[in-house]
Image 1: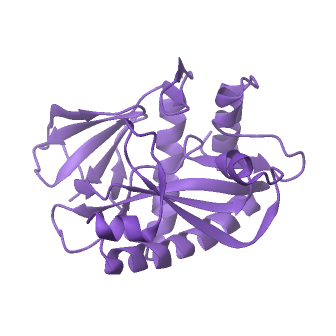
Image 2: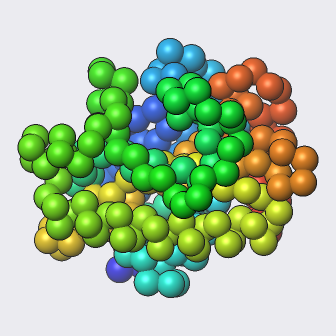
Length: 244
């Protein structure tokens, strides 16, 4: 159902580090509001990035539309305003799926590999979604034994994640941007609890994006590493996507 003037925004349901969810007059749909708040290192570093919510909403909306057009089921319905989008209400699977095309961030530190090293194939990692525990790295067995996901869930997630990666790699390459790594989340829609969809967001908050020519970082690492030019980097991604 597309948003129309008869539908109403309701009470706040949840507030996270980057987004707020609001009820609507349709119990199976919610409004996702993007904030300017910025956090890093599991909330240890906090700040604000001007217009981050606006850029992330635009970027994520476009990427969700691109993925939906090639058959990837997502929670996204439509962008409502500069900071809001209408999405299907989902029960999030408590796993963060990290896709790595090159070595960076925690992988470089954990294994002592050089940042930027190209991987022969995409590396999929699973992390347990828990702020209190710092989102620890887990195996598929952890997910199965603790009933966070079934084997069918994990097979579906892996298959669709690799499809998503193929699409996003090609799209960002067309913008002269290298997709280094990124985080995905999946959930079960309230309207169809036996199915899975891509949820949350895909944005410079959740991706490492490097300029293919210069290696310049165009993502939240500029905030994490105090590199400066954070707002400019986010807007540059939006500009290359034709959103500004």
